[in-house]
Length: 430
Image 1 (cartoon, rainbow, N blue to C red):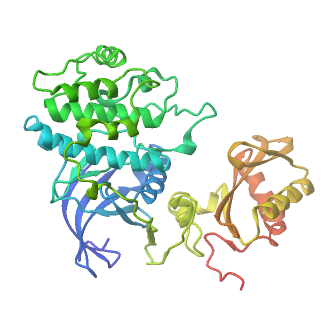
Image 2 (image 1 turned 30 degrees about the horizontal axis):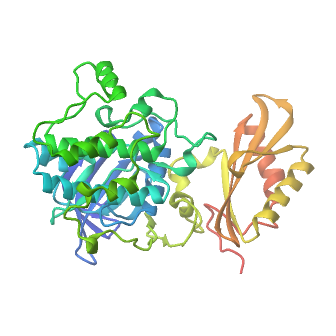
Image 3 (image 1 turned 180 degrees about the horizontal axis):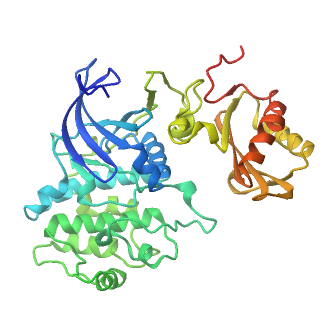
């Protein structure tokens, strides 16, 4: 950012600080071309690398690209320099829903409106295989019309994050809002865990305080695991019944999203014309400091799509380019042809080939090197049926040995299927 002019990428005029955390600051900004207000989340690359949060940043980009819903904060574009990553987000100027609740409980019809919008957004996410995993009033923003906007997808998970048992296994979220099965660490259904958190949010909106609270964290967890809570006398009978079904400690018998939306209390005052409809997914614009940009309609996650632009590879922002243990290239060959070529190259180098979960091809040496057996993984991402991104990286062995084999043997052997090597300023063949 040009500090003298307050301009970012010659596109945004950056204004006041809206908030900050350990790794990022959020500023109000104005789009110079459209005069539209936006929020810019500035992430310190060095800090997130130090604590190993880069995967979380990638996941947040990927998830937010999938979600286009009137009750979800929109990600307009991602920009990056050598030191910073910038999320350009929809500016939601009403602040956190938490600030409203902090002043006292809400009237039932007001709480219901917020809850209806929350459920609509979360159900939309679930239908796209996205689980938020950190739903709480602090992550629910309000726009100028008083509508809820779900934010902060940093802890979200995609359906492909599930293990073979079909469950998620990462313990995350805010303690007071987390579902009992998440605490037990035995694996959980992301959708059912989100439903529980929505129930806690509803209780807080109506009561003005948490259903499960104790100064001793373990005691609070015990209450959550047994669903020990009491409804205040001002809760209506219908909302009591709904909360009992949502805050069911058994995820198997916990109410589903479909049944929540069919519940009489939920449907009261719901304007069907305002029911959320799917908005076509617009591609997130991704820009480097040289103002190059690209758009691709793709089935890959957004961070991988970034890498497909010739001469524009964000991975260079996150690793030392002189000692990378991975390489990416795009290919116009079908996946079967790419796999066949990789197997051919592996055989010529006497590498054992094994297909792993998630479509990863592992190539492993037969001899012990200085730091173990050299192992290289190759993963193929489909952009379109005739256009693929291939990521190859060393997962074990000695870096110098890998670099020698890569430069002298593997890379030259792949020239027949490579369209563009990522990160190189070359024109792709016609």
